[in-house]
Length: 278
Image 1 (cartoon, rainbow, N blue to C red):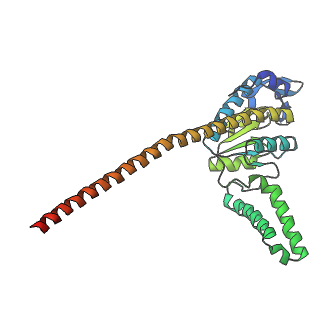
Image 2: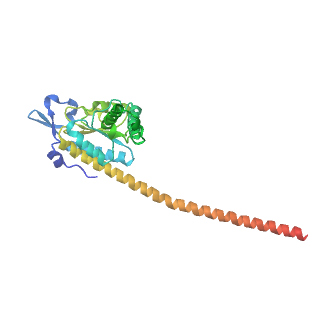
Image 3: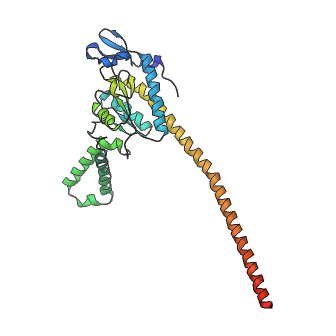
């Protein structure tokens, strides 16, 4: 797994924090210095934290579990959606639906409703509805798609959350913490890193900064998924010879039974002939 370079982070502007007056004292260990009233993040620590988070995400992906990406701020929406789609992971880039994790069954019902509406459109049910009813249902479907379409394949609780701007997405972070779901987050100098399991101290306002961190996460997840695929193929190949051996053993048993049956029939025949001769 490739490591993140200090120079690349510097070029992307990952080191720019918030104004000193907006800082959260809990971020002190990750701050290098202050310049013109702005805190500068220590990129050496950022690089280490990126590699730690990437290694953890790789293991989650390798186990076949899902990672939910969350970013509703304008600067992050597009890059997060592209990153999540590249690795076939669920994501939320619109408003966070309250209770999405703590009340997951209700969210699943709403997602199933989209499927019901789609079925109505194909089985002819729509033809029996008035124009007004069709319009209402179509609008409802569009709203559900906008808010929940990106998590339609999330049939069970995610195993981890990756959050851009943990301060803005604090509701999502709080729900995950309540359920014991590990949280990976890009944490700026105005946020509290204490609630995040895997802290990535970096600028969470610049698209370039968010993008370079996401690329490292995506590469790690892709590597984990590839290893999972290889392991499955190896397991299948290992099972094939065993299945063949079982078939051979089964065939031998059948032949043995047939031989025993022939021998038994021969004994019965001999006994019958002897009795007849007597």
